[in-house]
Image (cartoon, rainbow, N blue to C red; front, side, top):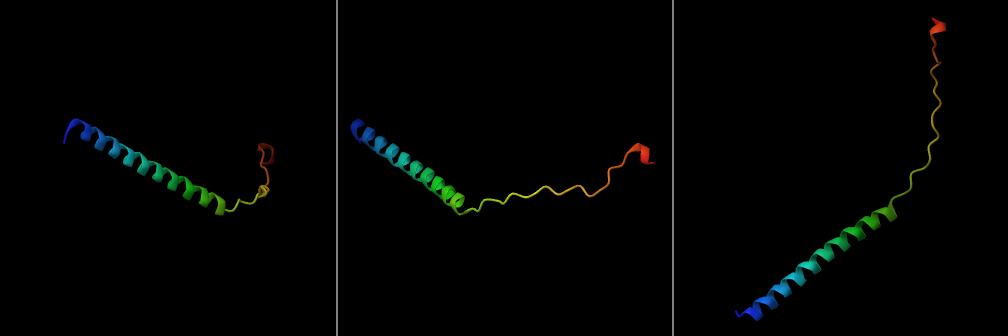
Length: 60
């Protein structure tokens, strides 16, 4: 293999690698986007009232 063919193969391998990495990122992003779309928003919960009486040093 001469130098020109080596450079061609290297460029081709780099292009394949970049395409594969891009595909992985797109799949990861699309799957997280899908899960966000299907996830229901949590409902607001009212804070519970403190049912314990407040104690003070004067009550003892």
